[in-house]
Picture 1 (cartoon, rainbow, N blue to C red):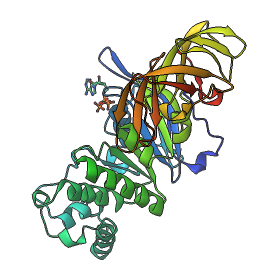
Picture 2: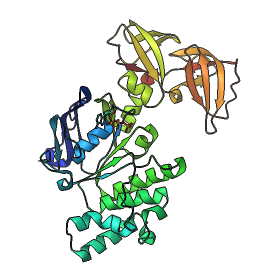
Picture 3: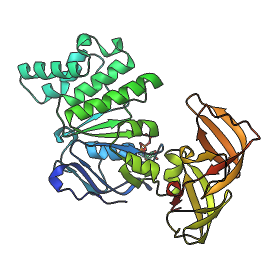
Length: 353
Ligand SMILES: Nc1ncnc2c1ncn2[C@@H]1O[C@H](COP(=O)(O)OP(=O)(O)OP(=O)(O)O)[C@@H](O)[C@H]1O
């Protein structure tokens, strides 16, 4: 899915990225990447390390030049504009705060360099600091702040400039797991209340799911799939997405009739007839149902090989398959016991390889 899919008019878009290509020397890092973001949308670029996410963000920000393609912000091509003349601000992984400036002056920096009158700077910085709950630290220097506080300063510094688009390059990766989860929820709340367009880069699928309206999954410089979070999770298009996003069960399969495939777990009916002779079908562990009696359709009699207690659920590893199945911790399924599984047809995804 390389072209923008929405039918909205150009003015509804805060950002359009059109056919971007980029190589470093002989290595192609981005190969014809296109996507757009509507005003007020939270988009996440998700993909493994080295797939080109940061390079794409830097091209949007004007910190890197594309070899081909166009970046459009609020309906206007910006390729000829330097970074500081684009209505785009970036929050970096390292926060990039000025160590010798106070929190207040860090937040004020962009406004002062654009010669915004002092009274307005004071008002906007104060508002920005209050919004991000850092007003109490206004006089501190960055080294006197925690990671989470520095992160808020970096966000405030970007947001007071009122950019059309805020770019976030793994801004939460330096935070511990608990704080990170809190900041993700806060970031989403902030974005909703401001109605701004945010584009986040991350390789963390849980982070992507927490914050995004739409997820763009990248691999080796290409977009593999883009769509609403639920759609990408529940309807992965190919093997890469299914493996990278959501840890689905992947079963090798042979086509054996109309909407039927043969898998190591037996013959199963699927929603659509595969276009391949042999390929892969996927199902998420939480969609597999357990029953005492043989189910009417897509039943598999399976033996529990391992039972892993994970607190809020138990993960069963079962044969044939192997199939990972997610069940309630109330269910007692000891290794060696035999259970009937049902693999609902509407939850079995036929993947493009
Ligand atoms: N200035 C550069 N010169 C040469 N190669 C580069 C340069 N910047 C990035 N690359 C290469 O381009 C590829 C994509 O890098 P990029 O930083 O965009 O990936 P990423 O998806 O953001 O990865 P990560 O999640 O690890 O930050 C990598 O192979 C990287 O080594």
